[in-house]
Length: 387
Image (cartoon, rainbow, N blue to C red; front, top):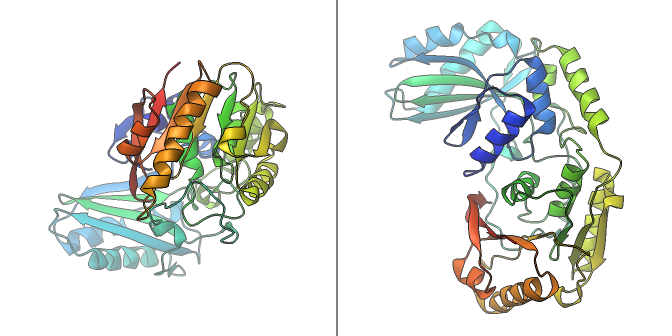
């Protein structure tokens, strides 16, 4: 998961029934049976993927690694004649050559399942996105196409001569909900949009407004949260194909998730943008997510936006200005955003994702950091103003 989101995910896991989830750097550890594994895959909103620990051992020589790797129960996860990928990292260990470690582990897997294939090419989820140079705006870059049967990923980590072997239970990263068909050069991931809502402590019973919504990810995630729509309800996961996992547990988890869905959002959700193409894409994305009737979209500049009645949450992901020469126009935009919040949304709480303290200051709002994370490799902060 993105750094800084560990406490949010730990709270999600506790609510879902995980006993004593423990935050670690870059993740959260917890114990799960088949039923909980299915539930967290369907319900987690801010996590990137779920790994299942298969083995942990100490190895300082390749013969020790080979012996330990042959004892791992690869058949619990891999299908006969299936394909697998390896992601290997080595840190402060005597076995420091990741390719050599991968060669030994792959040999152990093929020995356990002779018909399996080692897929050497990483998929798109392994490539770090470029730093964002615009807000969550649809650039018509093409379909976000689901891949139903990616090769099974195993994550092998050496740290101070201790090796852990984990199986990726998710397959595609969890931000791929399935509703967004076109993405920009650096869109706001669904998981980060959900983390913004969780970090801002949004109550679905209060109105929500995103006046610079781009392709609508924040509003759509808000509507799904408000209606208790499980973010993973419309997609498949790697663990569903594992020989050792009970299919009944997944069917039960999906049935329970579908039964929990509310017929409508309890409070107004408004989203607007000055770009007509972005609003068209946002409406299409919302329709695919099943929440089109829960969001009032409008093509309008900030100066023309009318917030819903009552006090609520103004939440947005404004441009960051990472391109040279953009800081001047953006200072004016951030100043107008602050003025809009004070004059049009008195008594509202405010939350915005920001990469530049100087631009934050232009809002003249009493912003405080609620979480620190990254977006496309760029350090960002969720800044909030409490009512």
